[in-house]
Length: 166
Image 1 (tube, rainbow, N blue to C red):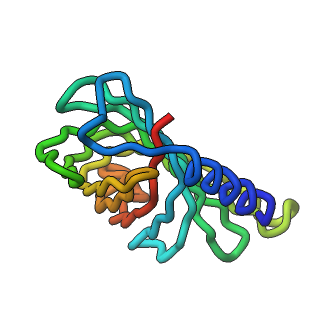
Image 2 (cartoon, rainbow, N blue to C red):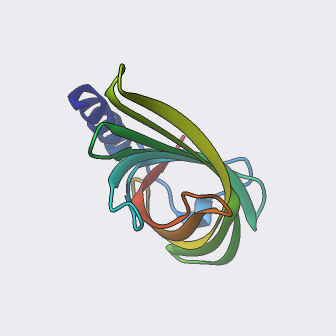
Image 3 (cartoon, rainbow, N blue to C red):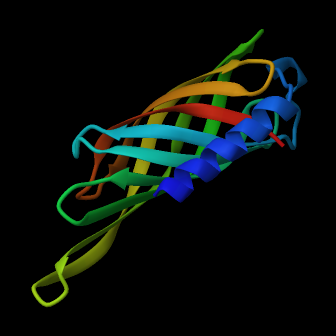
């Protein structure tokens, strides 16, 4: 876990000192990636995430996210999201967008391999909204979404982080 956090910080530092971007310069074909934090409302778990987006045109972008939730009681929870964004406001340094997509939730419990060892996955929908604020080195974002709609692991997820153009 420490190795993952150190690697994330190193990547964040490299992008922090090497990139400058604003929304006015964002063009079709632009790719942005970055780390973030997430909080699952139903489970109460904090998670770390990495996501990336590809700008299709002026109003749409598509992306994917991987989130690892820090769970207790020998439980592992992972969310993989495939989302599309509809950008309905973009002016100066602020962007607002809607989120829609698929959520794949993967879980496993391993108390003692002889006693309990179970795992599974759920497929659900994501619906939500987000805001991005452009800085000189990247874009800060905050999102609120309902993840896993239609599955047994649906929950409200609050996320925040930073994305860097590559």
